[in-house]
Image 1 (tube, helix red, strand yellow):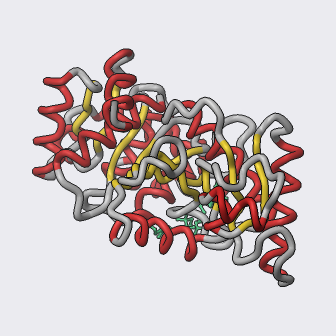
Image 2 (cartoon, rainbow, N blue to C red):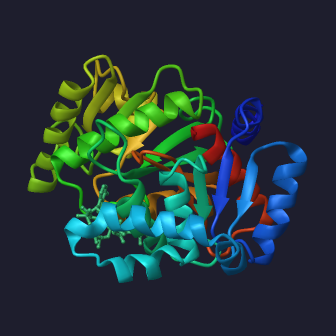
Length: 310
Ligand SMILES: CC(C)(COP(=O)(O)OP(=O)(O)OC[C@H]1O[C@@H](n2cnc3c(N)ncnc32)[C@H](O)[C@@H]1OP(=O)(O)O)[C@@H](O)C(=O)NCCC(=O)NCCS
């Protein structure tokens, strides 16, 4: 079964309510029909009209937003205005427990969706950081977990420090386990150096992050710093990282920053011919972003993944 089929099956087994704040966007409307027909989720299309039709709910969401953000200087008047915007309304719907997750991004940029998610939904208990996992299905089944790899962070955190990088590694292993069904995540902390082959402060950060992650998740198979070839190719691992429990067989790849992560997944997709699919992790309720060039099928799949995460 392909990864997306696994995710769809998971979504169908426990149908969740997913808010769609771009509820009058044509691809989203079409996707909602398919999602409902296939029983993947209960889509909630949010539009300016649907918001205006329920003034009492809007009022309660505005009060909720004011409570959440007053310490940050948000006035009641500004909260009322913001709550009526579909993106904030959708986030507040999730926060209030009236929806289980949210998908947007067919129209809005990543930042336009992430900022309200961070402000309203916030991190899950025990999580300090929101980040993302890219689920990668490679044509070469010898790589990762039968061709499946999980990359992070390719979407959210531009310059994670060592502690943040460690948090990303642990959260990504959890996503690999829970959403992708990878029973034994093997996490490689990537760098341009393998086990001390180069010295640089950028390498030191990855080494430090590896140690912190080991402390956070002592049972997790995690190793670094290592180069991409040492992480994936057994012959290279035998030369460069002998004895590593991860090198040569990694299925989770942690990039040192957003530039390398974002470039890395696009190389995998465009040159390597892999299917790539992103989810956010670390939020108290799942919210996921679409690319503005997304197809109806991309929206359906992202809603299914959000439902499976919920
Ligand atoms: C995620 C992002 C939008 C945050 O923007 P920002 O300018 O840091 O936003 P703010 O500083 O206003 O932060 C908003 C809130 O979220 C919190 N926050 C920011 N990043 C966070 C993270 N990764 N995890 C948890 N909370 C975070 C801030 O602490 C702040 O909380 P507060 O307002 O309650 O104090 C920004 O890092 C970003 O644009 N990242 C890149 C996204 C992108 O363009 N990706 C392209 C690849 S597709």
